[in-house]
Image (cartoon, rainbow, N blue to C red):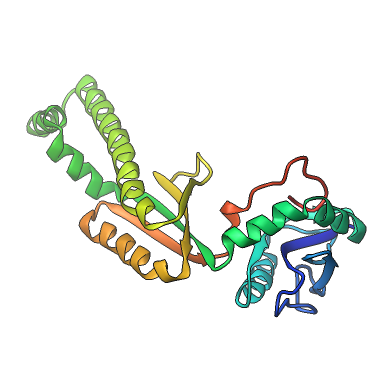
Length: 248
């Protein structure tokens, strides 16, 4: 049976949540495999594993419990290995890599920031800033709606202006928040967000960071900006060279 891997910690971690409820229905019991100076949190993997809410929360809960008392390298939901021995082999083969990452991420958490435009507010904004679009909109309104060609032209102008504003606002968010974090990496593209960024923060920096996100929203009411955290630092766990078997 394949095994589900939640994360990697030091073997002397003070409070690994062994026997906690893991993924699956009924929940599979979490167990700890130790190899040298490292330990992996694993459980049996259910055959019908899917990213259901219950299992996503169980995955998060195991990592949150472990991370509350010491550094843990969180693996993404759905990280699998063939069996216990394969996990041990990966820990042995890449021990230095994982130990170095545990040192780098100790005491740190991830904040994810996403932003989209509030449609009505951003249209008012770009009309105020774009003289050509504003003049055409006024002419169309004065003439009872405007011709098909004028409507099409206005749509093109607005779409172009909104795209430019999206790029400008994405740069603004990164320029303001990145200096407050130790590291910043982009999230997946094509998600529908104008900005999707993950930030690595020390625990003492979270208050200032959250306040900066709130201030950005207040000063830019055309932005719907959301921060999620503190989270396990998923986005900052790097793969060891020639990875195999343990979800990394």
